[in-house]
Image (cartoon, rainbow, N blue to C red):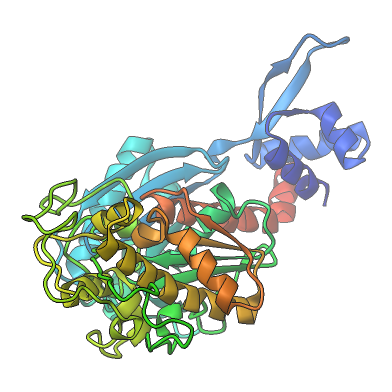
Length: 460
């Protein structure tokens, strides 16, 4: 359909003239003029100034009409709620984040509604103007059963009543996306995944998860559980190629919290793998950030015992809830390993990785043990999917020096080693991914309705 073709070109090219559209599309100029008139009547494109300075009359320019639709993107986490509103052209009209005080699912829904109302006011739109709402949430949403599961990090969040409340609050357009999948969509739209056919976005923070893009599209799996690598049966057992995590007999570990408690604080949650809570930049009050250490004994505080860290010890305290692997490699697992090695006082992963980069032997051992565990998970992904690229994200995944250590381990473990990068996306990664998903969904709806909309307007 001509209107569909031209709308795609206008979306890709931005402000563009009738003559340029005719040249790019191969359509006759009068055909382009008719299709543009139909799109204008449907409210999907508008004129946007003229181009001067070229021979002949000034060329009228066309662009996507930004108010043809609006997307509400929400990101729900244990400590923060974040949101944004974007228009049909992709421009962000408003952003907002709040610290959650909710202790249960019903209160959290009410807070999301309040956040949305604040966003409406900031963006200058009404709730009825929203054409698509996307919620990034921990857990797995199965559209066939209309059920949300594996939401251990948010009390009461996975019940059918919560889904019903969300749909009542945000309407039938509500789309639920796993938070790490949403962060992967942001990576595809704005980060290292742009133009990459297949990549794995591995999130390491309070929990561990993965978003998998195959053939340029997010792969969710038959039940929505693709990427739940926290369930990999990697128990952190002894590595046959290493005597210990670092190859040294004198090693130690340090911790990581999440939420930027991932790296800064002590409060952890082994299943909330959210972008909004594990990314850099925003930290919770009372977390142990900064350069202070507790007493003497070394860069990270006092060390008791021999400071030795075995990779096999990393999963034992965490039990087999999601998996011993996630219990070991997530932020909380790093904390436990540090304590087990005799580290005392306030310890955080940010301090650990910073100290490792300064050469502190205890911190080096912890970072090395973490690299071994992460490399095992990434190796499993490589062996099955063989992606072009693997991106590490989350508070722990973005820690300085980790990606280089993981790559060294992969050269020993994996059949091939794809390019490894560290995500540069910040605390709004999940929101940005939800916006990207919502705009794509809105475009699909609009283009599917084009024949009826243009036909109805043309005959009106």
